[in-house]
Image (cartoon, rainbow, N blue to C red):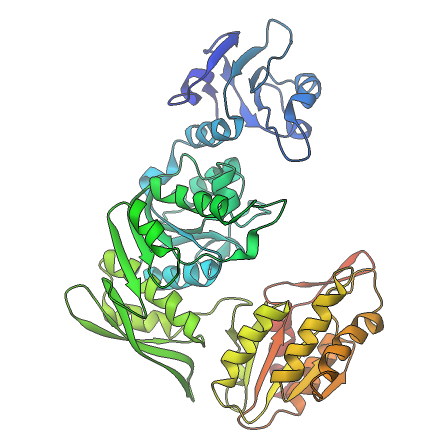
Length: 492
């Protein structure tokens, strides 16, 4: 694949400093270590490094053109283009390089502090149940159906060049839809510029990402999230947060969703359900025309009613029927997010969740207590080389809310498990909680399953979708889901 520089710069404001816009390019790159002969090298000014300092290495590797934000001195045969924002240029150049693949698919972007991953899986499952091929990009990776897209990504919203590469693969594979999580960092750093979004959905906003390395304050955080809604054709706004009206004011062609008040889509009669074949939540969803649909979701908790309501509103706008939505949501599962293991349901509920601090653990345990289990058994540990207050806090929550805590390992890193567990035990004992310690996490899970009683809920916190244990600088393969499934296979 080759393009001229002129072709790639369509729609970008730039100054040609030297060279020719007709320079033929063999690729685009922002990492000098990966530059190949004939590449365009974009100089990104990052938090820790400045791409302009790597120009000599890029030229040595064969780069023939540069996109810069600063004045540079390079040989006259090198084409140089100056822009105000190289990250924005990277996104738009990347979209052009791959032929603007998002124009040929329906792109659904979800943004919010919590619930993006789960809601994305719900939307994907519903659209697939309706007979469509669907791509998904987010925290758990990039997928077409159940298959992983072979592009390495490190962020919830990948770098723009990787994103456009993924979109091109999805388009080539026949995807009609792509559902993607849109993070505030992805918006702040212009990773999603150049994407032809059909829908944008606002879920919620909370203080989780206010820090020196993310967002200075809630105003900046909110403004970054709002950028999505200048890029979409239609907006879906969840109205049950203090920030919802701010998003509604700037949303394009909005529809609203609520569990509490007036909206276009309103969920009512929300209740937990624990039956032989379903552990989750049910509700009625009233559509704008007054029609009421019954929805059953195979994931527990009020917050999953929120996620499912948003997913159903998006699906309804695409003409998906009530029957298809309900069928899909009775089958939906998200790795590591209130993930129920069906093989265990004949006796106890076994659930995996990524909660790995006191706040998120309390939310999960409080939700599970609402199902009135015979016993609530909690298996968890805490990461090493992290704040001691985190392990004490998780211990306090388990001591208050679990009938039995099984303390085990969770990425001890360079700390001894016994030292980590001291903090957890300190927290548990503040509330006289019942506990045992089993350092090996597989053994801890097997112990809980061996001793499960009818009506128990066993929840594993902390690992979620992770497939490793990090010990003394080495990552060893470990998947809770695999451990549980192996247990039941061995019992057959």
